Image (cartoon, rainbow, N blue to C red; front, side, top):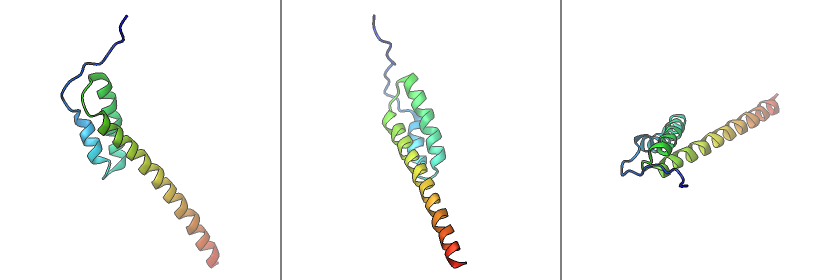
Length: 85
């Protein structure tokens, strides 16, 4: 009994390249393209898994840091407003 393997090809997944470039400008699109690329690469065996994975990791780190920055801004903004009254 042999394990099912995905076929290997020399083609690069276009969504992986787009995801890696896009994540630096619009995080949400980079995340979406990165997840699409990972799903396609899993099925097709194309190159670009590292690029897609990097885009997804960078995207989620940016989302977490953005949420943290927003939370801190709201907390310190509220403290500054309450200190002035």
